[in-house]
Image (tube, rainbow, N blue to C red; front, side, top):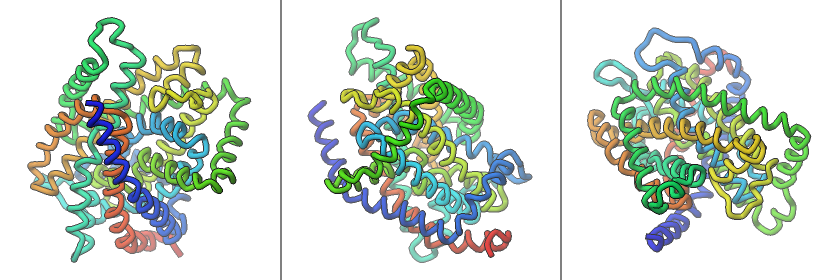
Length: 449
């Protein structure tokens, strides 16, 4: 087994390397272009975004709060908790700077993509809205939009698989609970059992469809985010003297002259961008698939609410996680990576049992992510075939949970990074091409001079 896993790691890495630069140019370059076009105005309307979040409209679809909760269920969690640890382990504290900058650009990207998801969408047979990147590509770009939509949807079938979540949940259980000390079955057998259990738990929710998913996530996610943030804030206040030196270390590491000269600087930037994209999924095109189902009648209203995603999951949650990991010093241990590293950091700084409390939150975050990601795949498969057939993707999705529990974290990161890059490219092309539609609506609302 280990031989084919190692071979798969090498294949994925060889494919990812050239796409890293394309993704870097697409997300950062495209995001900066959209920032200039919008004059950064959406970033100045955060107050309006929070006001719109709980304001309902008399149209079919899910509420804006439900849409954002479902998106956050997919992004807040293991991507922020273990993804940040992976980034710091691989590139040092400085990667946080590039995650922050990418998050700000990501807010603008989310604004544009989710505005388009409402502007250019269709309806299901019962009149419910049906939107997402594949639809604004097909409806907004007449000649070649369908080709981009097919490209995006095929990549999406693999990009939204629960590989990272299932893998890290399994690893967390193995390392913290240590089930083999109670029943000696071996790591492989325990991973198989955990994978099967996760797939069964997920089945109860995802086969209930969109309404079932948003109902569960809108109840679970906000509570867990608040609890995680309060726990993290307590740790930071308790170690307040270390916060300023930690920020100095982050800045120094991000712009380290020696790193730039030796050629590692761009690797650091790419790593930060990759983990930020993985954390908040800006430019990938997942969020518009939920926000496109919203009750919003104006695209820019939905775009403002969607902007809150990167603000909450990357700027706030990732910063809290990153500071704790660095202050604890756990990132300097060579054998720790991913969720295991974050657990060790919380254990060190929260009375010796912070890892156990975090484990509970990780489980809730992880399971809610398993629920929400399935819907992305359903939409992609439904677009490629027929909308009514989309639900059959769930069987493939459930099976992949078991596979993800068994392989290494390097394999799952490789799969996700590759698929996200292939989703990001057509999505950013479509957004830049259709950006005038968003700008026109902003002018109609007197947001631009």
